[in-house]
Length: 184
Image (cartoon, rainbow, N blue to C red):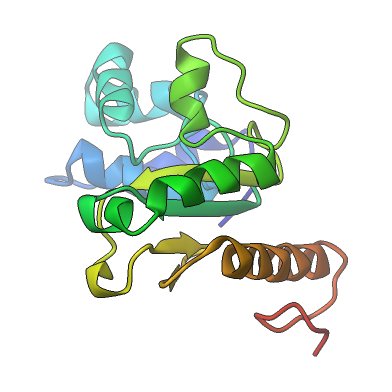
């Protein structure tokens, strides 16, 4: 995944647009390349697919999966489905907000002008809601940097968050680290 978009958006988009390929497939491919769908790609996508920029923007913003801004370095998706809620999931959400300094689903809060906290926008951690990770028998559950974690309590969450941050810091500093945060 490229983090820094280049000015060659037309070339990147052209590599994904093929006859019969849907706009959704192209948006997914662009997001896979950049980590989000840069605003500057919308005109290229619209031109290549013979659509208006408004049509592309409408689809992009309709689906919650697509990002319009670069993602945080660490994404935590907390399950908010019934099973996880009944086993303390909402308390875990409140704890995660407190220890990370950002609100869950900050991009939604930001859209209506609410403050989102220092860790949220383009930062260290993003908290997102997800509705069922298939771990109902082991609630509450979350994904931390793409890895499903179950039977979470605040202490285990804190340990997993610290380990994920250590891995992220090691990658930034050019060190290879294990999933538990130790240098390898």
